Length: 540
Image 1 (cartoon, rainbow, N blue to C red):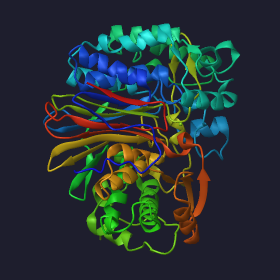
Image 2 (image 1 turned 180 degrees about the horizontal axis):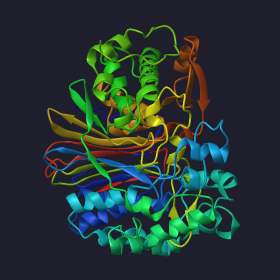
Image 3 (image 1 turned 120 degrees about the horizontal axis):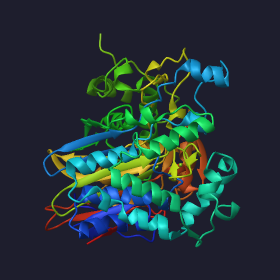
Image 4 (image 1 turned 90 degrees about the horizontal axis):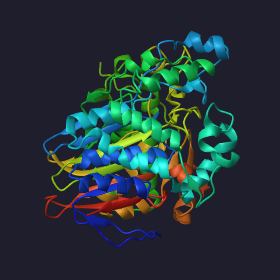
């Protein structure tokens, strides 16, 4: 790809060129990954070290009680890892209806009854055992050091930390862990999390076993019983991550790969499959026609996503049916070039997350994402070991009349997930590991940034910096304040309900990108890190 390296968007970041790269949303996490490479580790070692470190430096987005997914190129082929945990053994619709009333449609947003089994640490262990070079304990050393010595609070994380405090300060263990001095840390203040250092050491010494049936699991079970939860050490011990085959869709001579359901990556593939039926490159990149088409394609994708996607064994149709070229062409024909529409699901049946990426000079590339879901997840923190627990259980349905029974809660079942890593290949060879975090912004970000690179030749940093929109529901669209006012006005004239938003972190996600320039041992890579976070791409 011959990128245009003139960046038309306001930004103070430039693309990074190197043979070994780690790109994350916090510089200390990126540097933790580089430390592993300098010790002789590979991209997997770097990704795990960065993932562990960022549980400390960006706890608003992830913690030791998060879930995770990964797509990696091992030098020969792609591998996918689903490290999202299932519902505890007690969880049924009746369990929640007894506690929260027969009208409850989902599990609660916060507290122990939003906590499904956390899978991230088990994912780290699985990646290390299969692909890592260094000892697992070595990978957690930077994170332990950060937890013990602390770090100075960065700008963006502090803003979100303070914003979450009023809602979460009464959650079990939250104030003890995240409100030193009885408040959120201020920018530039030293934050230490020594209990998390204890948890990290136990995880390092046991290769994760402490969290999955051992001392940390016992502590979580005890803490849950004291605070109205039902998750047990056995729920944790029974969990194993799943190696999966990524699903894919061709677009403009490249192939985008995503983790299959129970995640939402298929939405990006559906949207790109729809856009394949239009000549986007003939339209101005930031003009109304291009943006309208992308918005409508994404709306069509979400209509099918929310109707059909959940745990694969519970889905009434297959991903292959949802990605069928003829079906997507029929969906493309529904788009009116002059009018916004509120689409319903079709019938394809025939007759507040962190993302990081790492690549090394031997060709290994890792696309990795982990999340506690909403800011600080459940708000529950097991205080002895500093385990901040996700709230992925809130993504289940309790509605027995819900047409998407694939996401109805059941013991041992995984909820619908928003976090998705992405990977791009061409002719079976690796091109880019990338992701854009942020709830339902993730497939939208995958699509928007990829269109900018493949249809318009924008380099990864420019594609990352460009103003984004975010589809919510119906006709409602959020747009960044940097978007061309003429385009915003024209979209509104087509019937899009446009809300211009100044808070880019909250609504538009943040991405990390590594594009392979050729032989990684010679030409290396070009990388980008999103200015919407405190992050950085680093390399050597």
